[in-house]
Image 1: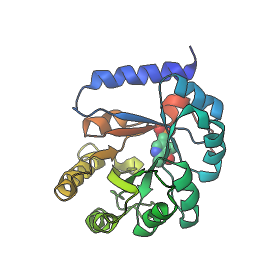
Image 2: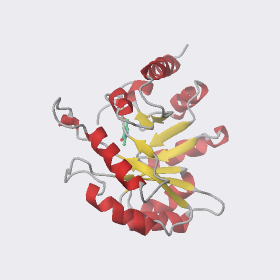
Image 3: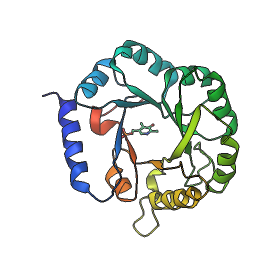
Image 4: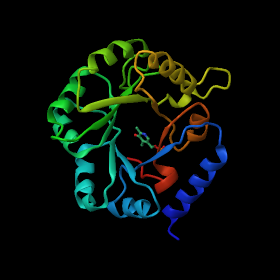
Length: 224
Ligand SMILES: *Cc1c(COP(=O)(O)O)cnc(C)c1O
């Protein structure tokens, strides 16, 4: 059995033992810096959702693997001038944090295609990170209601690494609370994209519905 398949089996076994939520949890294999060959191995082991951060890097792989029927998730920072190619090539966008980006995705979304969108929230109020402030999400959601092809169905966070302080309320719990508040006016908001290789089990216990796993599936990425 390949290493990738072994790791996926292990993760799935772990998930079925967690049983802490009623939610089913979707696994996104984040394949940045990994080859089409690795992606194909993960696909053959049962993964059908893949995430990429860098558009140029992703386009080659998406093209090479277009016959597989993969769902592609854009999880990187979005520049306005990339929206056309993102809309044409991805099925989900996790990192919407302003109206302009969403409206450009809508403008360039091909006919008869729907893109699922998540709003990236800057839960830890870090200046270096993208994402909208928690208190601004409500207003953004109102603005995004006019969009037809971009369906906003949840929130996404990348918590600060040093945040795992035992006593503090976890960023996962805080975003879950925000989701519940927003659901009153936005019943379609159901997904929480949170949890990466280091912390996905904790994220799932706090209500994650989508985990984004890179190294735990593909092995270590080389550092730049
Ligand atoms: C790289 C990346 C991941 C996966 O990280 P791992 O630690 O390898 O699991 C998840 N989400 C985003 C946004 C990423 O950039």
